[in-house]
Image (cartoon, rainbow, N blue to C red):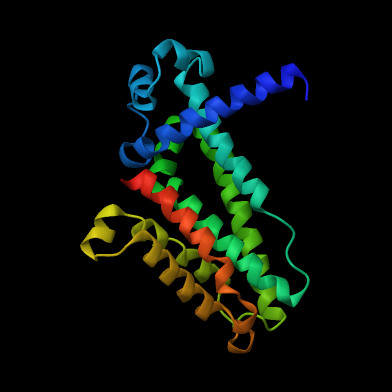
Length: 223
């Protein structure tokens, strides 16, 4: 790797660190009214340093939106061809759905549409593309007899429950831990989706480290 590439990677890493520190505030309070000096205070750097990495607030949110687009693009992989691979793909999709629900909330999308419509269109197009990929995955699993015969669009709609589940007031009111509620939701989806004869192909021990990681990430955002 050349020195120039190292500098570029460090620059992008610092941009990513700034955005990650800012995301809890964006999720809770939105971003439309945020000023650059407020952002600098939230992420713990000087305003001059913030301007070094993001000359304008629009640049920052371009990076946020493009990051989401790239994340969704990276996760839209080729659908499994072998029956025994549907279980691992299901677990991968579960992890992705939780991560997306944590940050791409309805409020975030509405605010993005009102403030930066071109960014919204780009992100929404990728969200719709992911839904088409999910439908293909569910339909392929049903065709092979791995999944129960369920309306795939209802399964996608069910992911909206995650927005309510990943709410601090909901968790506290119902005395639920993040890890517990994630595993319960995972179990619900697994039992609902997989044919009873194919449940044995799902190795729950593989999802536990992912749920633990997700719980830690969610805790940093919610608390």
